[in-house]
Structure formats: C-alpha cells, structure tokens
Image (tube, rainbow, N blue to C red; front, side, top):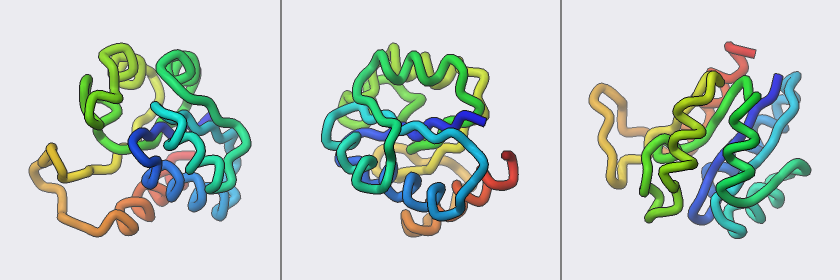
Length: 133
C-alpha cells in the first residue's frame, strides 16, 4: 500500500503524521510531499526518507496512491495561504486514493466535527489509516 502524506506551511501536521505512522510500523510504502521546502524538511526530520517538494510531486504521487493523508486544505484550491494550487487540489481530490483529512479550524469549519487539539486529530488519522490498511 502506498501512503502519501501531503503538507504545507511549516509541515507540523505532516511531520507529526510521519512520526506516528513510522512509530506504528504500518505495512505500507510511505511518501512525504511538501508544498514548500520547509514543510518537506520538517517531514524529513520526522524520519521520512521518501520526500519531495512542489506541485508536480503531488500530482505524480497522487496518481497511484492508496491513501492520502494531510490537512483538509489539501483539497481546497488557494488554501494554506495560497500554497495549494488548483492543480494540487485537483490531483488530491480526483485521486482514487482513500483520503484521511485532518480538520484545521483556522479558515474552515466542518459541521459536526469536534474541536480537538491537533495531537488528537493526528492520533485519530493514524487510527483510521490502520483500520483501512
């Protein structure tokens, strides 16, 4: 199974996801894609080996991903302060991969979602990944 973690900005969510997925020793091939170099660098610091930066790596990684994990903004064009281009949003949202998205309540409110600390959302996302692998 191919799992792609996508993040932007400072890569805090992506780094936390990478650390937790690696700690669980899940049976998957893990890739980290940052929308900028800082996000990618932080995911590398989280223990990632397979990492890339930018729009085209997102497009390529989403083509055959089984799971895509990241903040909810990765499916919304111009989110993450404009880092999510329409091409990135389309690549993620049109991928046949199962998406596990973490709500970030800065600019988006998802009705029915509890307001939890980011650490708890990371744990819930990893649990969902484990359930579906």
